[in-house]
Amino acid sequence: MISKVFPGHSFYHAVHYVCKPEKKGEIIAVEGVRQHDYRLMAADFQTQHQLRPSKKKACFHGILSFYPGEHPDNATLATIAQQYLQGIGITNTQYVIVKHTDRAHVHLHIIANMVNYDSKSISDNWIALRGKKVAQQLTKAYNLIPATSKNLQKTNLEALTESEANKYKIYEAICNVLPGCRSLEELEQKLLRLGIQTQYKYKGQTTEKQGISFQIGKDCFKGSKVDRQFSLGNLQKTLDVQARQTKSEETKTQVYDDAQPLILRKRKFLPDESLNNSDEVVRVRGIDSSVHGIVNELLRPEERQESDVGEFEWQLRKRKKKRNSKKR
Image (cartoon, rainbow, N blue to C red; front, side, top):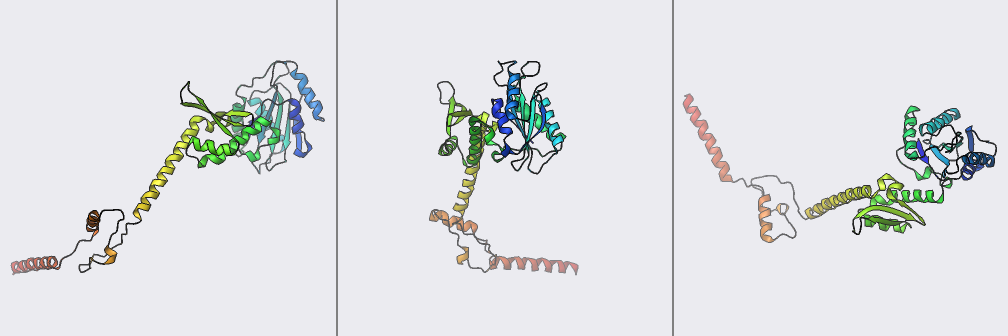
């Protein structure tokens, strides 16, 4: 199960989206708002927000996405969503939970008021991170399939603001081009072809890079805000590893190519084998003729001279004859 939080929506925008007929939405739980008309629902949320108008971002909009093929019943889905809200500290307030089935996976939209019934503001510090941790806990508790990565295909871009949608486009673009890059410059060029500009933050008046940002249109995001793995430090680590791997592969290829002119064949060490046989010739391109001769000599099998063999057999016969004479 994946948790995603979209801050900054207006109540009207959020409830209008989740209640669209084409989204095949079904309200499975509601607290403190009317549910038969999205306009009245938005008005109820807004009325409570006025209890603390200084709270600028009063609309909480979260999504819980389940793995394709998982279909918990509505009661279970409602319980999971309510426990999710409690886990991230959104309690004693209005909310609506809507199930969408317009995609291959079931997902829940949760709209809640960050101004509670006591007119107090609900903290949204690190709420996205808290949401991910609570979602992981609920995934284990309900024996659901855990999420391993973001999937743009499973993200409702229509539910996002233009800025949020652009951030996801940057995420997808980097995921696609990063594996083929070996340096920041190469990454920068490939992203530019996709309409994404790369910007750097420098240390003081030096050329030392301290941070990286990506811009598409009028929206600019720090790399770490797009995804932790896209901070300058993490990107540089990934690129360094890929550069070393490429260099290693090129070295292996070069060694293989250099070894191709060297023709070595398995030899049978026969005493009467001719050393002038063409199969015994070792050719090394680019090596001086004198060195060429030394290499051939070193790789040449040792000759077994007939005289050496005869001397060895004579010594064996001599020792055998001596032993027989002692026995007598």
